[in-house]
Image 1 (tube, rainbow, N blue to C red):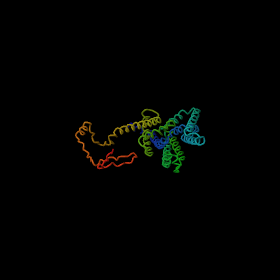
Image 2: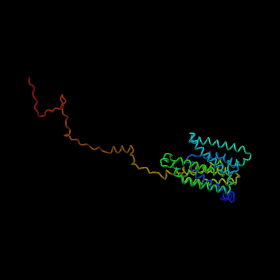
Image 3: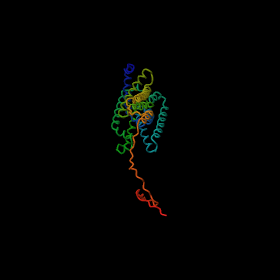
Length: 343
């Protein structure tokens, strides 16, 4: 127990834990919708798409977080524009802008000789260097995320179920889609400082996947995803402290590991439940009378005496005699005299 708590006695580790936990809460809420709506590719694309904004902001001396937010917002708007005006599918628009923005960021980074350290921070994050200002920004991002998630919860659920039903109910599914993109952009930009643009999808997807193994209700999944995310931050920072590894990569790896362990534990619990369920829920079979064996049936047939059926002689009536025309004719009475033949 002390092995987990000792690293956080220092000031910078405690600040990293607090900031990383805020990031985990943001990603737990947004990541649930990312998994439900299948928007993982969008999160990955926005994470790479904000690289040009961060590079330009670093070159001009502006805050890197501001450049990341502007670049991510521009990419999100361009995805919607290409989808509406360019007649391209959603994933095709994301793929084109994903490659374009990433290549642009690499070109900007390659023109600066002093970008080695900054590029490492952009790609992999540096949660140990979080300042009090960054913590305040993360707290504001968490508040905004909670407010949007609560206000648009009904629209999100209806749009995830059926967009036509949502439109019939006047819930505006297109607005719900836009706000979901805003939430993903907010989560990616907020997580940039902690885990970097390359590993941000790990905190978006892994805690939500781990929580989805145990619950199917969206609010409960969000709470469980937040818990798994905070646990990943604690394990990742402790691993970084004792193993000397990169803190952002350790957090992302811990989140993936927790998702795998959660899936394995769920399978084990399901296997045990299926094994013992027939004994608990067994229905007694109906009891049937024993079927006599052939020997017993033959013995009963031999011992039983058939009951005679009484037959009345008077009940037997002779059938009428038919003549040549088919009509019945009466037989002569038995007492009628028979005429003699004359010569």
